[in-house]
Image (cartoon, rainbow, N blue to C red; front, side, top):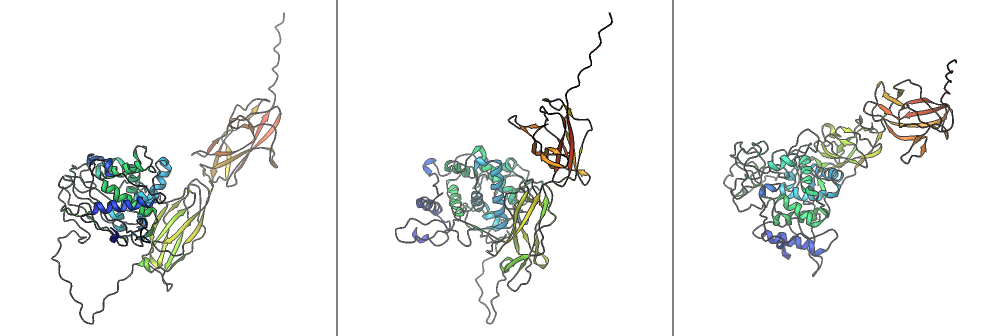
Length: 567
């Protein structure tokens, strides 16, 4: 096995032994965070006998390529761990953004699951080679469908059609679909719309990554517990070899990774169905009706019949060997601000100023067609269109890339908009973006009834106001209410009317108030102490709106005695 170190491992007749050795190397290192997977003694057979319908992929074939291993540093050293190789550790920018967004979404909706994005990356690598090396458009949808073999019982599970060919083009049998390889019946239950485009699309990496995350977290699993992690992976594909392969990539990605431009990821070559006569995962849709056309493969991407191999022809004397043209992203030497000011927005509103960046080469010329990554950094609810925190934008005319539509959340304050060159360790550009509170420029009472109370009592009628901004309803506006000493002295009064806090104690300033969707605010009940007179309540909002309300405290009038009847 020592001869295998220092080069990429390929699956052959001994794939199972290679996978087991790789995991053994991980386990033997006793490195922090590395745990071993269950062995075959946990299961009498190497493959689970659970029905294929209970797995995400229908137990479809998967890629068995393993990450590279380093040679031991010295004789007798523990087996080496996978390291972040320059090629294999790279994940296409949009695919990586989708994994990280799914992790963030589940950290909010299901924090007890503790899903790491590296697990999604490991499964994505094994299922589709990271969406065939990141062959996705700007929205994360694969450029051509990724379909598994027909599950017709010939070498695979027998799963009859469940989607009338809607996803896989086959009306007789099902096929695994998309970058995370869901079979249609599983997608019908677990499909997600992670990019908020109104569609649950298994061919979209954002939708598929979130669906995979929710599937892995099902049943209240805590994925930080190894037994739960093993069960989650086996629920995706009932194979111990699959578990070992995914775990090897999982540990590998945990050691470190980086983003590479979309479409430039390493394509896997070895599959679990090698030698069965089945074709590798196709990237073109089959003929509807259950008769798939020729399947493309790494050596035959078009799916057409392979021509008879021809021997290599010698170059003609004097004919220069053409120099490959590097992709545009590889020629970028730096990026610069293309005239962006200070991006600002009101909470819940859209940013009118968006980051605008120019990519240039070493000569200072504009680079068209380069991939730039726009990323939201910091504690904020702001999101790009499609509810995304990171997007890849390709430079256009003049080498310019502009961030997509950006909407502010409810959290106010500053955050960072970061721009980097996809897969390149070049200087970045950081913009400070600011979210300001919702504003109102006018406040008015909704009624005009006099507000009165007796000493030591309470005001029977509530204070209700409505906020507007430029004549329109101002919803969600923060309002501060303070009992003040005088109209020209807004200091808090220490006597007179008051509110009560959660403990029933008197308070004369409230700050946690907001108008509703109609711009209306009803203040909590107001109480009076023993002091009498006319007191003032001042309401203020962000945006300059101010309203002063009179509160009168007076003894109840003494009732006039009723004269006795004359005798």
